[in-house]
Length: 220
Image (cartoon, rainbow, N blue to C red; front, side, top):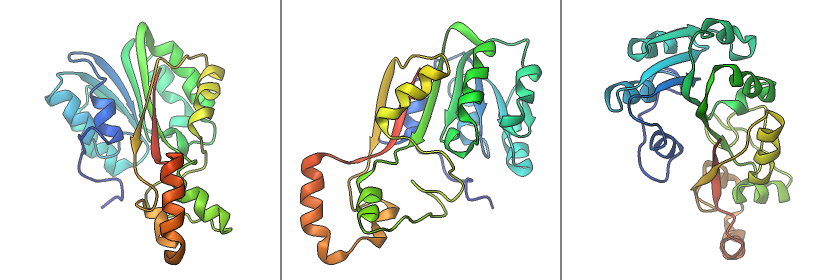
């Protein structure tokens, strides 16, 4: 089973929950990196959306395309989707924890202009490299990739919340709404490497600074 074949989380403090609450019923959606189609299925069955998907992993694609109007199994960065869906204009385009996996996410984001309706929007979520647990580990000269999480070992691009505006602007978009999932310091998967004896004073300091964000959500 793929490590990304996980249950769909819809609570208010989750990136998937926040994104799906922004998707309008009966809309036409392009979902990048849909994995095994948990969000795809929800949008089809609960929101009555027509969902088109792009997914690299063959097995994940086969699981997800059952719930899609149409789909493309391939590398997002090969841009085959631009031609494949050229006759469609989308109400919403989704990048839910996807852009950080790409070599040139700015190029991919810029190319979506051709497929988006004039009144359409793009929903993206990316991990926040500025989370307190990552910073505290860095103070100890420690940078740890993990199987999943903030520093998933397949992540090759990183953003802090302040960097997202420039990234989106360079792709020709303006951020309309920005939100975040909150995970307190010393509670993420990165906290396992923090010195237990130092945790209490460090925790008090960083809670005062409110460095708690784990995933930034931008709505364009």
